[in-house]
Length: 77
Image (cartoon, rainbow, N blue to C red; front, side, top):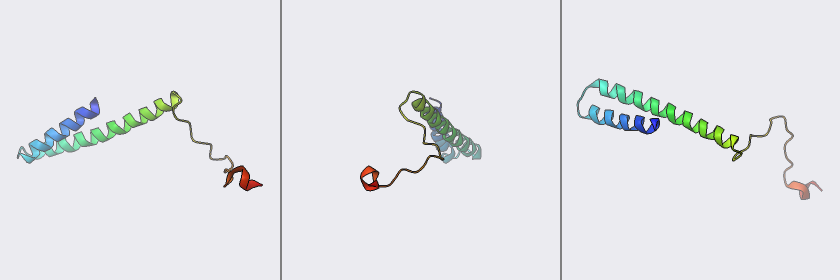
């Protein structure tokens, strides 16, 4: 909900800035845009963590794991 409000506020401040309301409207629009970007980033990180907790996604393999053979079992013969 916060992301939607910040996007709405950025649109509203941008409209006010184009209407000649002054440079403060452009500053508020920039702040609302940065806030919306940060809010969307945090929201996506929370969704990723929640999907991992619920078992929808898995953790990536450990970097020290040996690489899988190319071609599978048949190519290894």
